[in-house]
Structures are given as C-alpha cells and as structure tokens.
Image (cartoon, rainbow, N blue to C red; front, side, top):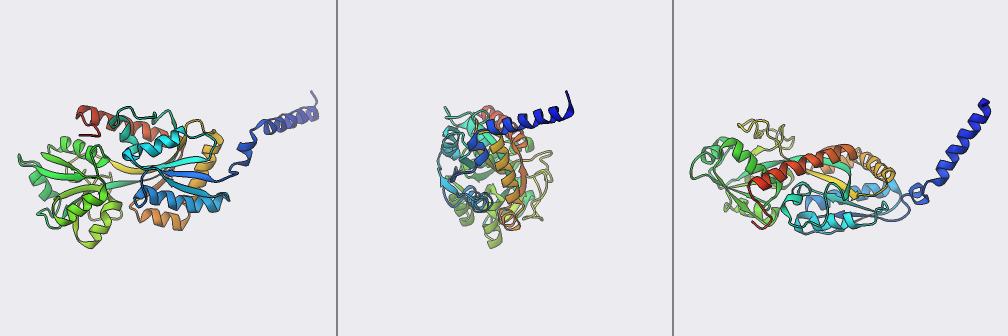
Amino acid sequence: MPSFIRRAALCLLALATVASAPAWAQAWPGKTIRLVSVFPPGGSVDQVARILSQQLTKQLGQSVVVENIGGASGSIGTAAVAKAAPDGYTFGVVFDTHGTNPSLIPNIQFDTLKDLAHVTLIGTSPMALVASSKSKYNNAKDMLADARTVQGINIGSIGTGSLGHLAMIQAGKQGGWSWTHVPYRGGGPLMNDTVAGHMPIAIGTVFLAMPHVKAGTVRPIAVTGAKRSPQLPDTPTLAEVGITNFEALAYWGVIAPAKTPADIVNRMHAEIQKALKEPAVAERLGAQGMTVTGQGPAEFSAFMKKEVERWSKIVKENRISAGT
C-alpha cells in the first residue's frame, strides 16, 4: 500500500475514534460538580472538601459545590457517592474511617473496593497521643510506666472502631500495655474532657490536637507515624519508644462512583494534583498536620486494599463492633 494511502487511512481512523467518543466525555465538565463531604461541617473532611472545591472551581471553569452528608462514621455520605450516577458529576471526600467501616458496620450499603473509584489520596497525617496538662504524664516514659502495670491507663478516642482506637489495640498488644478504651462521640467532646483533666490521655489526629498543644492544655506524648511530625518535631514516634515497625496514619482522599469513566477519573486526579501544588492550598492543608501525597487511582486503590485488610483483621480478632 502506498505510504500516502496508509497515512490517509490512519487519519480517517483517528477521526472516527474521536467522533465515536461520547460527547459528554469530551465536554466534561459541562455543569456543576457535586463534592460530597462525608462528615458534617467544621471537621477536617469538610475543610479539605472546601479547600479543594474553591481551587477546582477556578481550574475547571465550573462550580464545584460541597454537600455535607454525614453520619455513621462517613458511611452514609460514601453510600450516596457509590449510588450516584457515574457521569463525572459526583465525587466525595473521605477520611480514615473509609478503611475501618467495612468491618465495623453490619450490612453496610456498598462495597468499599468494588463500588467506588479511588481517585486521589490527598494526604496523610499521623495521630498524636496527648496527655492532659492536669495529668501526671509528662512524656511517653511516664505513660508506659502505668501502661505496663496491672492498673493500666485510660485512653480516649473519637469513637469505637475509630482508627485511633484500632491503632491503640495493635500498639498495646505489641507493647504489652494494660489499658482501657474510653470512646467519645467525636473529637470535640474528647478534647474537652482531656483539657478538663477528666481523660488523662487521648488519641486523635495532629490537626485535632494542635490547637490544644499550642494552648498548653495538653502535652504531646507520641505520634503514630513512621517519622516524627513536622508540627511536633520534639515528640517521638511510637516506634522510638519501643513499638517497633509501627505506623498508623489518618488520611483524606477523593472518591467517585465505580463506573465513572476512566478518562474523567484521570482528568479529575490531574486537576487535584494541580490544585495541591498551589502554594495557598498546600499551606492550608499543611496547617492541618497533613503531608500532601497526591497519589493517583492505582496507588490509592492499593492503599485502600491494605487498609481494609489490616483493620478488618484487628476488628475480627478483638470482636469489635460499632456498638461496643
């Protein structure tokens, strides 16, 4: 076949491919995008969603509107995303409960790994163990002195089955701690009681703890990352105080319905990556104690598979349920 005919044939094939692509995919986004925050206003998930929505609106030339659908540790809002039309106009922002809910909530209304597309892992943050300034605990050594006795210690978390709760179960077993879990209904009540001295030790995200650390009402004891937190550079990791090879990270990510076209998922991921590189966005997320990662669909999906498997094992071994 003469080369000019072959080139003409290839051009026609390319034109046919473009013509056959769905018009809505070529034009995306052509209307307002809904970004579901799976927790109520005021928390870190809502703040992340609003930071992203403002920047994405500028980049995409279409409104990205945050809708708060809270409840059941984020599972109600996540179910709304899973059940939405996979047309590229519904996304969601999730938190670390995304990896623990599948094993904690009976008859959960979606399959985390099958019914959702994992678009971008925005960032991670270690959790912080903090002691009330009214308690006798000044550092990890003080805490461990009681944690390894019959009397043990009380540790409060934002709720039963929260990442902090499950992380302390794993750390406690590795370290031979004797401790009692005290669940609260969220970070606000937990920190209020810790500041007041009613709860000697609490575990929560660095974002949750930092205002109280700065105010001097709680003392940071340890963080759950593999490395020290930039926000708490003088606070050791649990690995440094004897819980070797330990890491448990809070995280924030963007999801979509499972059958959202790959080209739209990839485009949204690229736009989020671009947003995360904006200095103002990076600064605001960093202020929450977050290490921005911006990992894409493949990496985020692999991360979630490991998270679900890890915490499911802890939940089953310790017979934990959302109501206990």
